[in-house]
Image (cartoon, rainbow over all chains, first blue to last red; front, side, top):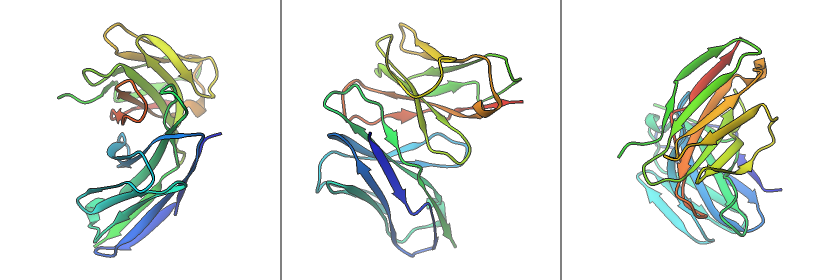
Length: 112
Length: 113
């Protein structure tokens, strides 16, 4: 069974204090790993897609990396507006006929 | 370009009633996914439709059902509502093919009283 585990569950940072969120996965053939940001009561907002080990993507203060077993979302010099829940999801399988499997997310709070 | 739109935004129903939730995908997207996000839990996969057909189904009872229309919009029906069905229901759309990202709507908050 495909599984996604995110850690930590919650993270509290001071503004400017860089850190990383972890997403560990076990899948039968990774077709893509996705990062989303979700604000309270809203739908997830797409951030990145990673396809193969060694790949990296960047957007403003966020950088996502991928290995064969996990992905990291690095947050550099975060600001209070980066506070949100960050979700990791994978699509697995040999065909495109599988849904995204999500982790439970990391709730990030950035304090000014 | 319009994103994924869901209606209604909020829905309050009584236990035992039926609820109908609607989703319009991004233009050009043929796949529609439904997820349930209960308070404090992660996104649980409900249903996946593509080209009008149900492609995959999550571990939910048959009273959760849906359909996809020729214009690729979709409807989720929940029969015989139970208190534990209270959750944020999220719809996402995606182009067919593995690895492509899914884009989510803002969700429908269903409250069962």
